[in-house]
Image (cartoon, rainbow, N blue to C red; front, side):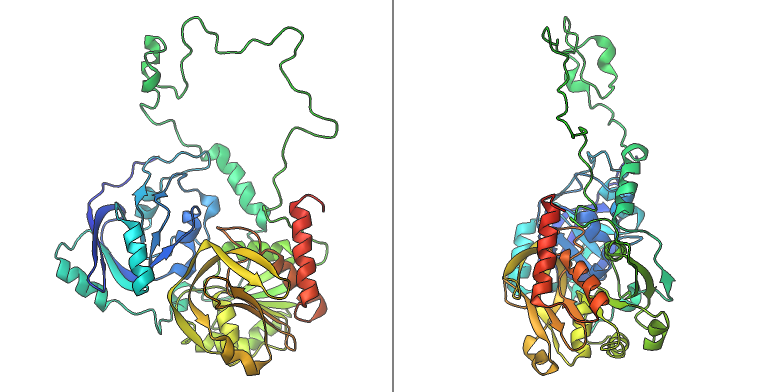
Length: 475
C-alpha cells in the first residue's frame, strides 16, 4: 500500500469571512463548493462517492475518519463526487481486513482535496446557525482576504443544474447484480485486499521475546517458558460441540436488509439516472427487476418503448427547480406507468405534479434522521442527503396524500398519489450508508408494479411487518 501524500498547511474559508486552518490530506490544490455537514458516524466512502454531493465540500461531524480505509466494494459511483472533504482527524494507516487503500491515498488518486485538524464542532455550529455557505479549501492561497473573495465568487447552489455533470449520456442495461454482488466483492477483498503488516508494528513486544523478533512479523512473540497454547483439561476435547441443527457458521444476511432472495417473478424497470447510487440499482434487482438506465434528458416515448412495469426516478445533486427536462420527462410518464422516486426524484415528481421546492437552511445529511410514516404510525431512522425540500401545501390541489414527515423539522419526506400509482420518498431507503428501516419501500414498489396502484396504508404496514419478520428470522 502506498503511503499517504505529504500534508501541507491548508485553509478552509467561508463566504461570511470565517477561516479555519488545518492540514491537507488527499490532493493539493484549491476547490470551491457549498460547505455542508454530515452527521453519520461511518460510511465516509459511500458519502464521498454519492453523486448527490457533487459541488459540495462535506464536513463530517464524527471526529475520526479513515479508520477502516477504502475498498472497491463500497463505492456508489466510479469515483469520488465531492468537491472537498473536511475532518477533525484522519487516520493515515487504516486497520481493516477489507481495506485496499488509505482514505488520503484514495482522495489523492482522484484529485480531491481534504483538510483535517479543523474544529468541526465549531464549523458545524456555524453552518447550523448561519446556514450552508459557499467556501474554498486551498493549499495554494495564503492571503485570507483572497480566500474569502474566492468563496464569495463560487457558484450558488440555488438554481444550479448539477445533474448534467453526473448523469449518463445514453441508456444502458444494469448488469452489476443485486445486493449479493457487493458482498461477494467484499469477500474477495478479504484475501486479495488485505493490508500488509505495518513495519515496526511489533516492536512494542520486543522485550518479551528473543532477539530474532526485532524484525516484526505482525505476531506477538511467546515469552520464554510458555508454549503459546492453553492446555486442554483432562477429559475435554477443547472444542464445544455445535447444537443439533447448527452448523457453527453465521450466514450473511441477504444484503443485511432482511429481504428474501430474488422472487421468481420479474419486472422491467426504467430507471432515470440523475446521479443514481449503485445500491439503489442493487435493491431494484433484489425485488426481481431487470433494469435499463436512462439519462434524464430522454423522451417519455423512449422509456415507454422499453415496456417497463415501473419507472424509477433517482437521487441527484443540486436544485430541482431548473431541471425542466427531467420534470417534463416525468410529467409524460405519470399516470401511464407506476412511478417511484427517491430524494431528487421525489422533488422532480412533486414539481411535475405542480409543487414548489425551497432550499433548506442547512439540509438533512446523515444516517440518523427520524421520519414518521403517518400511514402506519411507525418511526424510521433514515439515511438522508438533500438541501432542498417540497412545500407540502403546494401539492394540496394535486391529489397526493402525505405519508412521511421529518420529526426534526416537520418537512415533507414522502407522499403517494392514489390515482396515478406514484410513490415519492425524500430520503434514502437503500441506505448505503445507514440503517435499513426503510428498505420495505422497495417492496412497496414491487407491489405497485403488480397491482398498478400506489401502496395503501395496509400494504405499507404489511411490508414493514414482513421486514420485521425477516430481520427477526421468521421468514
